[in-house]
Each structure stands twice: as C-alpha cells, then as structure tokens.
Image (tube, rainbow, N blue to C red):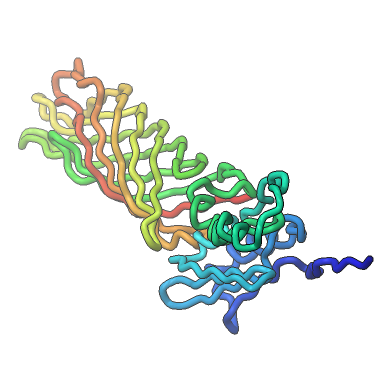
Length: 316
C-alpha cells in the first residue's frame, strides 16, 4: 500500500515587496516582518506568499495560503504592517475530530457538516481569522516597552503679572502598548514681567522636573497624545530698581513651586526614527507663594504654553 505525502514548500512563507525601491520609512517595518517570517516553519503557518504593494495612501497586504486562498488588507502606513502580518500568521490546529459516527449515507454526512468543515485537522482558515483572531491579537510577539528620548522648546504665558517667556524641556522614559511614562526636566528662562512705574524691572525664572503619564492613540499617519504631569520647580523672583534713597538696588526670593498640569499634542512622521512632537500644556501651582519681601509681588500660579520638539525611540 502506498501513501501520498503532502507537499511542503522548503520556505513556508515568501515575503514580497511589490515596488522597485523601498522608501526609508518602510525599511524598519520590512526588516521586522522579514525577521518574523524567517522564524516560521511549515508546521506553524499555512502561508505561501505575503505581498506588500505600497501606494500614496499606505499599502495593500496580500496573504496567500498553500492551498490558494487569499486575503487582502489595507494599512495606512508602515507602523501597521507588523501587527497585521502577525495577525494573518496566527495559526493552530483544529481540535481532534470526534470518533467516527455509525456508517451513514454520503448525503446524510454532507448534510450534517458545516459548509467550511474539513475532514482532517489542518491550519485554521482565513475565515476563522476574520471571525475572531484579529480581536484577540497575535500570540507571536508580546508588546515590549520602548525607550523614549525627547526635547522641545516653546513659549508660555503666566497669570497674573507675567508675560510670554521661553521654555525648554527634555524627557526620558518608555512607551508600552499605547501609554507613555517619562521623567522630564523643564527650564523657564529668566524673563521680565509687568511692573509699576517706580521700579525698573521685575524678573521671574524657574527650573526643575517631574513625571508625566499619557495616552498615545494612532489616528491615520499621526499619533494623538494626552496626559497629566506633576513637577517641582525651583523658582526665583527678582526686582531691580531704585530704592527711595535713589540708589540702585536688587531684591530677590528663591522658593519651591510644586505644580500639577495637563498636556496634549500630536506626533508627526510617526514611522521615522526621529518624530516631530507638537504639544500644548497647562499647569497650576499648588501653593500660592507669598513672599516676605515687601517689594516683591506674588509669583504667577497659572501657566499655559505651546512647544515644538522631537522624540526618538530606541527599539528592540
């Protein structure tokens, strides 16, 4: 008695890039997918070819199985490619068949089986994927944190008794799933504030740091972000002018300024190593500072600002 073995291609899944050249923004995504596909074996997937056809609005991904079935999906950019491929490669064996029933006619057997049932266990069909695997996510890779580094600069206005001032900020932290957690440092440059006619100059400045926690939501080619932060800054208030004696004088006061705030923004060119980050923020001092120096007014408690910067992620 002879048996026929099922043919298995030596390389279970072939990755194809359907374009003459690979744009820079797709390079990393294709490298990750190629690494994933290289680890596959015939008993892990029923994939024969995986084709990526780029266009101006993203790409079309075509997944073809060894028995000729094809699924096509649209993606908006390279950041969506790996997650989609992992979902398409979700595989497994159907449960072992039940013991064979009593002999019946062919007509009865066909009537009792679902339209897409198979007489022997095999790789899950694309119909099964569409029905539930996408919702459950892929088991091929767990979401690992990514280290984030960034910096930005902008302006802020404070209330009351303040004008626009330059602001600089740096941060370091991690993004995981769709969250970011980071420590940041902030510098509010020394700047003049409105004062009365009897005084030449009133200056404010602050420097310090804190922590921020935010949510990152992909929307097309962008990532929208929003979160909260807490910080403690070392603030200084300085007044330079004439005393009643007519002599030039200076008085100042140093103190700690604890703050709570909110921020929101947008990340551009998300698929690049270095991404632009536009952010607006607002915070409030938790303590109203009342200086013991009579010549100094109260320090501004409310701040509203906007900044433009960049971030980069150090990936696995």
